Image 1 (tube, rainbow, N blue to C red):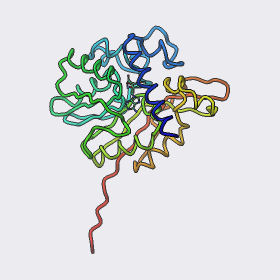
Image 2: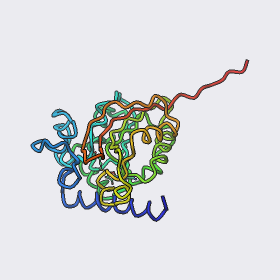
Image 3: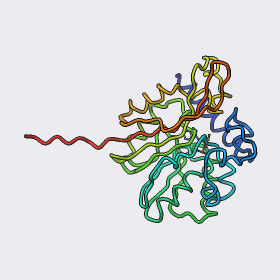
Image 4: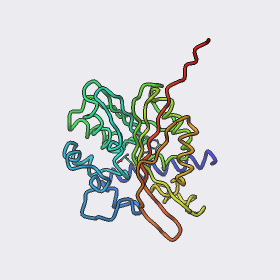
Amino acid sequence: MKPQDVNQIKESVRKHYAGLIKTDESCCSSLTDCCPDTNTDSPAEKNGYTEAQISSIPTDAAEHSFGCGNPLEYTDVQEGDVVVDLGSGAGIDVLLASRLVGEGGRAIGIDMTPEMIEKAQRNAEEVGAKNVDFRLGEIESMPVEGESVDWIISNCVICLSPDKNKVFEEAYRVLKPGGKLVVSDMVTNNLPDWVRATVSTWVSCISGALPEDQYLDSIRHAGFEDVKVLSKSAYAKMGQVEVASIKVEAVKPHEMTVESC
Ligand SMILES: C[S@@+](CC[C@H](N)C(=O)[O-])C[C@H]1O[C@@H](n2cnc3c(N)ncnc32)[C@H](O)[C@@H]1O
């Protein structure tokens, strides 16, 4: 992809999400079949968050759930852990993680859209969360120290990146050995080239979504091991084109130390 295309995609994604948060739209009012079609549920319910989780965070954070799953459902985050959420939006997963890691841990959100960072910070202030940190930045060059993180989570964001290899390499860099990546994301099959080249469907998590095997290869290529699909559910089917949401887990291996004989 040419650098100007990368910049155009990022600018469009940033503008799109800044617009959504400013006009107070929720996920389902704009994305192409973003949520399963049970139209009575709130965005967070549709994305699989429990009532207990939803009632533990500000309504604003739950209403601005733009994800395609609930990545924390597949983690075993412990008190004292450090969790980084890639593309943290209005803060839903960071705020939930902050409760799990407690005072001795930290939940960090990275997002490249200033309006999202501001919204997330206001939501954190509303619940008095002291162990959270929202950082403006890009997930292809994370503002996070190397080998400092126990968990990387992400919810419907990596599909928006024009350089997924770089995102997974960065995730690998910041994780401690033994740390885990657990992401919810979109994958597609048989997407025509003209759709891949359309920015309006890119911002809706469609055009940038890779086929599943390419997505998993990109994670392995960064060095991760035990790459597993934990669940997969169909999102939309248009003729031959299939769009699905998947939850994926991968582990950064411990370095092998070789004793000299
Ligand atoms: C579909 S929303 C998901 C937000 C959040 N994870 C949630 O579940 O509500 C995508 C978010 O990722 C951010 N984003 C997209 N591409 C990014 C990138 N390359 N670097 C950092 N943030 C990015 C957008 O600004 C937006 O807030």
